[in-house]
Image (cartoon, rainbow, N blue to C red; front, side, top):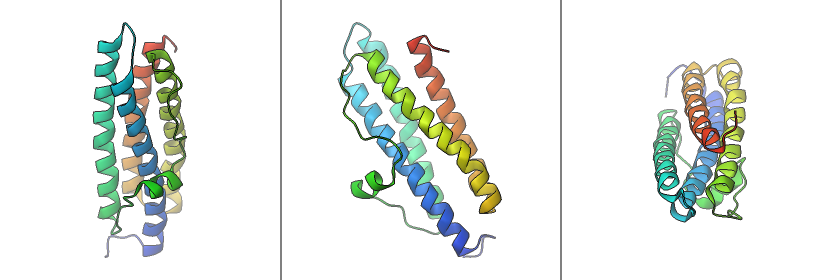
Length: 157
């Protein structure tokens, strides 16, 4: 493969992308669980909110996986690989009311945002991969918007 990135750099990029993929998958799973299990008088509204967000995460997961393939590597595909690579806590919701679920999902989005923000310069400067740096910038913006929507439901700025 001759795309202007050394195999060493591509391997380092893919390792970080696999961690990003793991985070996205864990958040997707939690958001799906939120969609299925939310209770309360705001059920219908939150059910739709969580559905919209897990659909966005599903798209993100596919895009991250395809980025890994575009860089010439295979995508980790087992739950054990996902759990070994994630920065998020794989946890069951302690309560299924929307406020407590949203607080957990918001914290996860914010963790991902911070991690992606750090990765932007790693990909661009250390690995000389401006394409992945740009790609990750877009992911960060997607998570910033999702976090904003969740934050708005908690009435926090």
